[in-house]
Image 1 (tube, one colour):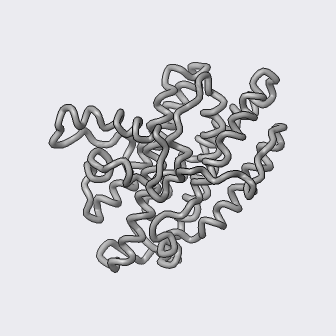
Image 2: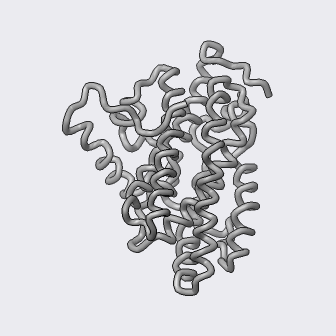
Length: 273
């Protein structure tokens, strides 16, 4: 599909669907990055510490790409991030979860599950009908392979060690159900596909994700929960429902903005286009 729609071409209905898609994209990346920063200086090696810091910076940069598109549609950065009520965020609850104590396995499994989903989601945006979105997808895609390679390398390493294999298995069991929230529909999801903003449906993306992650994890001797048998989390994020941990995290990353009463906050971290 040709990317032939621009901002001035959007109907009111199309803009609402597009805004929903962009907020979900941006919120996932921003909150995932916020959590990853908690590992800086605490990762098990200097190399992995630097790698995770780079991944977090990339994800902040991707969030900025999508928030900037929302700003072109009339929002301010403060409205997108710093002044937005926590109940209006639509990220999947996978990314808001705090890490377990001594949870390097948690960080690696979470990163892998998220990065595979993110790659598939970005692939489904390559042929988007919205030209400004098409212009930005390539940059994000170029960085996602590195994220996935890093997670896969650590999964192979941890799974091969009997001492850490059990912890990785526990992380898979714990994180697999909330990872499925990445494919929960948000507001106006039907319009996202109908208007060509994303070229694949969420059920199709979920099926592709399972076709990738399940064989890989099983190849490492890990048991993966049956997707259709797992209990749906009480909070899924896409509909504005969140865990208590999210409200604590939101309080933390907006604290400086609120306390100093910034008229113009520092720009969102990360590299621009």
